Image (cartoon, rainbow, N blue to C red; front, side, top):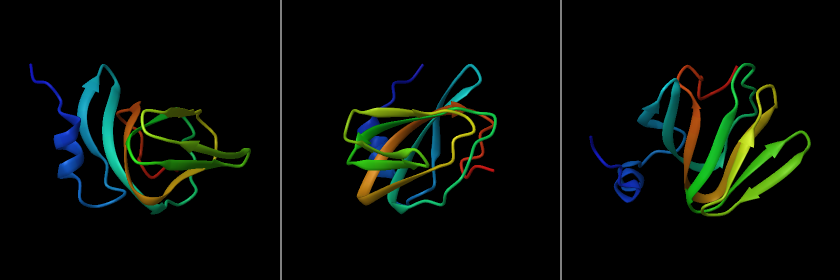
Length: 106
């Protein structure tokens, strides 16, 4: 048994768009990633993806509009929704998604 210190996790991530697995809950993965700039548009055809902002501010763009997320806010992207995440400055997010999710989508 080991606690997770999110300050330490955030400090350890130096490169954007490279999620690290920090825990598994049954068949789901908890991943932390740094977001900086804009990611490519993509779709997860079979999996939902939850974004929770630990530090900074991000935007989730979908074909239905843009969602702004500040620290301690989250958003669930349902499977099949074309989306991308972006930020103007480095931001760190907790991702909650099935273990088999390809972090770059289909």
